[in-house]
Image (cartoon, rainbow over all chains, first blue to last red; front, side, top):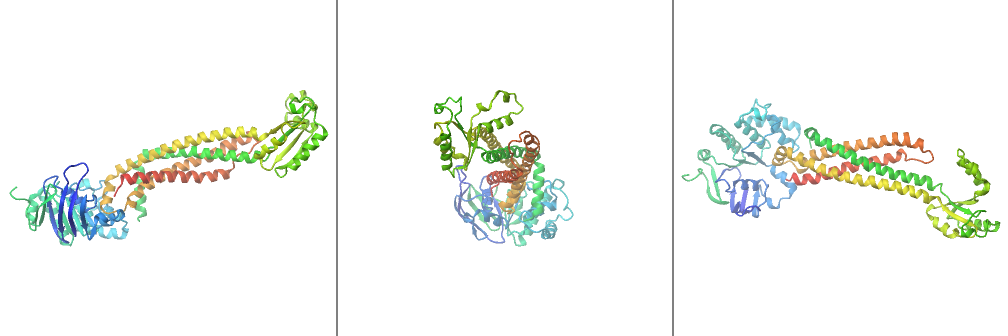
Length: 229
Length: 302
């Protein structure tokens, strides 16, 4: 699903590379935690998967495609296969819950009949039935994140990228979000999630990839957040 | 492609950015108005050229009693000289289209007609007016051929080209047109800069939407289309305003004021306005579209 082959990412404004000769492979259907201190390269890792950045050296493969050789006009096609969730939800405040989810389909030209069918379905999956007409500011943080997950998942992507999705949520709410991501993973979507939340990582016991200074320092198949930290 | 979705995006974008939209509409209207006006002046000059060049003649004034140019030192023109000049003119066909001899009596009649309300008529006698050949050229620009052949010949006092008088006037109009065109170009540059800035602001104020669109895999075209349409719509509205004022100028100022006051000449017809209007519209929309397109390429990258 994802293959990093000796990837180095050097930003022009920084001396140290954000990623340094990183090689890692993530299989289809896996649930992977990406951990490490701030500045360890987690965000760069995710941005490379989304082809928001290009590697300085090495190559990144996603869904069988070498992203370095992907032409600009094919990038949208790649991103349609990837759902993305952020710490700050990134919802449109002037649209309702249903409209926020529908937006993701409207802008890729899906027909109205399909949108009317799948939006209620996915809102049910994330547990927001009955709140379709609410606006984001009327929802709790956990509910807003569920809307964001619904929007990321409505197109049934093969890969879900979650950048600290529980970073703004209290522990109880976080558990709910993790259950949802786990459910999405069981439906066949590969999930890559960066996090600082040790409790969640320790509880879920999934594969953990730890970065530090742009290098892979740990890759554990049923890992915990960190050694005696 | 969801037409209603794009249309609603365009509508909300225009409303959200109302002041900038209005600014774009007005600058487009003013710059295109000037642009159209300069094209109209050019059409006017060409109409007048067609009208007047068709009527202008080269006048060959023959020596009379009081003529004091060197070529008239032999006294008034003789019959032999007159016949020779006529024969030479005939030999210049087809450059010379027609030749008309105006006698002193006819010149006096014309003079009286021209100045019938002026006391000057009483002071001028038939003898004081020169006889002349009125020569019409097939191509008015070939004046030099006639001038070089006849100017300074014995019996000829003066060779006059009416076109030269008109040309001064046309040069004046041409200058006016150039000034209007230069202002129009300056205004069009201002318009382009304003559109560039408007697009920047629009792209910034909708960065949330566009970033989500990017993430869920909307195509570049789809992301940029609402912005492009907004720019094109504002420019189109401005162009229509400019075209409207151009038509108003034609109807009120040219047809209503100038044409009745200056009946001796012709003015541009509606056909010129109908030719200029689409040029203005296309220029405005295309310029705005291109300005927006290149700005968005910079600010809405994939």
